[in-house]
Length: 516
Image (cartoon, rainbow, N blue to C red; front, side):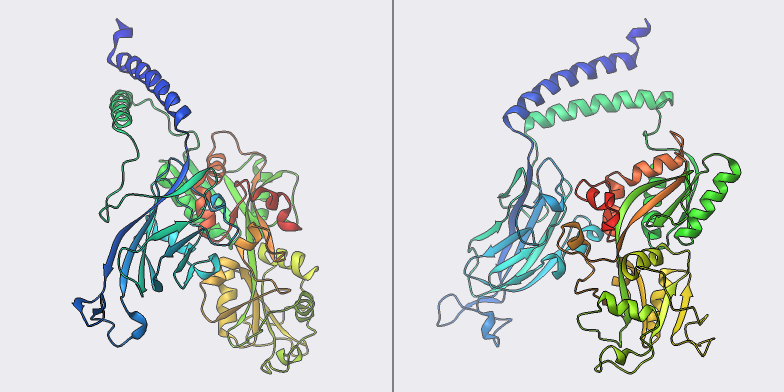
């Protein structure tokens, strides 16, 4: 009989087992609610040097004989892990300080710290910087608010002095709807079991049933791809500042969704939006194209549909030879970009007597549009007087100003030309040599300060993803936008120093268009 086929028998058996397991899990959940948990354990607490006793009890001789500050030197390896059932975000840490957790080493003094063996080095290592609270003093180590997926961990190798091994080590801090707790000691790579024997048995049985059923279904070759996956080609254009995010998300999407081909060709926000509008008007339907724009497009057509995807922070940059101290006021910046300040010494007699060189983006740049709207309050009034930023084509002009096609070109020119000033998306400027970032109105560009309302830094804006009309359901454009708002897209956006609008805490900033 047809209903007694192998597929149906396995399906019915899996369903029955699933109902029973669900009942057990409901019972379990009622007694043991799901919690967010951070566990910590000391995997090593060893002396450094030879175990030789001198006339003073318990003093070790060896590596640090000539350094009186390193008496009783020890090394501690502290593992911190998400051993709960849910992921932990930066917002889940409940302490009032900028850092998330505090490690206290009783009766010992911290001499140095190294971060080692994080689960995801590229993602986690970015958080271990002083700007995010990472540091130590005395016997106290400040640990940043590190987001940890379930099962993620990192290790801290701590050099200490002044106390013997085995002294108490405590991790202090709070997790919303969860706890921070010590785990039992373990070998360096051992992980404690997350589930009981009964839970593991149920999971293994269900897994085997599902794998068997999946094998039968796959053999029939009729299972659909995931709902956000779509095949075909998609062109992404627009913002050069957001292009690295778009490329990384596109790479992840292509890896997950077979048959998808996504090309990123950043040409500037206005140029990209203009190309999208022209192609849509020509075909009278939604083309397979997304145009990213730093801020709302100035020439927005009623046929274009904009989706807010991220909050971006931008910064003014100057050549490394200019030390502007506490930065520039908005009034100073406006005078400079009107051409009223021609030499830096006019602002401060302590500055070098170098001519001001304005290195700007072209008119298609969303970075420039946000700069004009949020900082200058008008367009850049000084005219363009140079094609190469080195030779003034109009010698009567009070100041040299050039326009370039990309953020990278602006940063390279500013780093190479003494007295040059320009602007850039913050994350690009952070990794560029030969530059100084310029505070505005006493505020430093910081994504964290913007996210948590600690700064009214003005040079920021919302990144928009434009489509021509609403992309058809099941199209590659619709699937890519949905993927951008999911966990992978959010992680990529944050890893590039931006704030995802899909995060509930960031949504008010996106609705407010960056505070404009």
